[in-house]
Image (cartoon, rainbow, N blue to C red; front, side, top):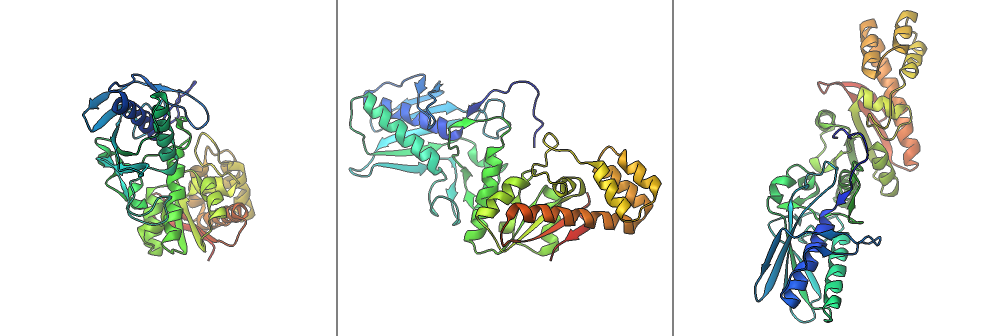
Length: 366
C-alpha cells in the first residue's frame, strides 16, 4: 500500500464516471452532430461534475469520446488512462447494450456480479452510463434510443496485470468500477472490492477453504503449506477487518489467515486495520506474554521498551528458540480469537505466522 501524503487530499473520478461522461458526450454528438465539451453528468448521490474531452470522433454511424481519468491524489493504477466510449445505434427494441473494447476485460468465471462472457463493466457503472444516455436524449428532446456502447481503455490490458483481475477470472483488460463515481484518496476501495470478489469467485467455484494473506511472502508460503489452488488465495493486505466482515455475511467452511509476526500481532491485539497509519503494536502486551511464558525479567523489561513487534520477537529468539516459538504460537492463538469473534459464525479459522523467508514460526487452529 502506498504511503498516504500529509495534508488535504484531492478526490477524483472512477472509471465508471469517466465512461458515463464519455458515453453521454458521444451520444449527444450522435444525436446532434456536436460534442458537448466539457460534458457534465449527474452521479448517483447528486454531484454534477464536468469532464473535458480528450478525444472526439464522429461518423455517420457512431461517435467516440474519450476522457483522461483523474483519480485525484489516490494511487490508482488507472490514473491518467484514457477512457473511451463509442456509441452507435442498436437494433430496435434492444435498449442499451454494453460491449468491451480494447483494454476492457471479460468475465470468465462465475461468482462475479456479471455473467460469464460479459464485458467487465460492473452494474454500478452500467447504471451510470444508462442514466447519462437518457439525460443526453432528454436534453436533445429525443426519445431514449436503442444504443450499443463500447467502452475501451488503450493500454488497459497491461494495466490490468497490476491488478487482481486475472485471479478473479477477468481476462483481457481492466474492470470498469465505481458505485458512487467518486474516488476517495487512500480509501483503497478497488482493493477491498477485489477481496470481496475473490471470496465470491471462490464460493461460486465450490471451494470450502480459502487463505487470506497480508503480503506476497505469506501468500506464497501458505499456498505451499496447504496446497491450495490460486483461486482460494485472497490478497487481503492490511484489510483483515474488511475480509472478515465480508466472510461473516458470505461464509466459507474454513479460513486460514496468513501473515508476518508484526501484522498478526496487531490482529491479536484486536486491530482490524493493519496498516501502520491505522494501528500500532503494543510492545508491552507482547512483553506480558513473555512474562507469562516464564521469560527472564531482563528480557521482559527490554521487550517493554521495544520499538515494535519485530524487536520483541528478536529478543525472544536470543533468549531461546523455544521461547520465540511459544510467543509466536500465543500471538497466533490470540489473532485467531479476534478473527473468530469478528466472524461470529460457523467458519473454522486457523492462523499461520511466517517469517520473512516464508518459514512457518507460529500456528493456531486445526
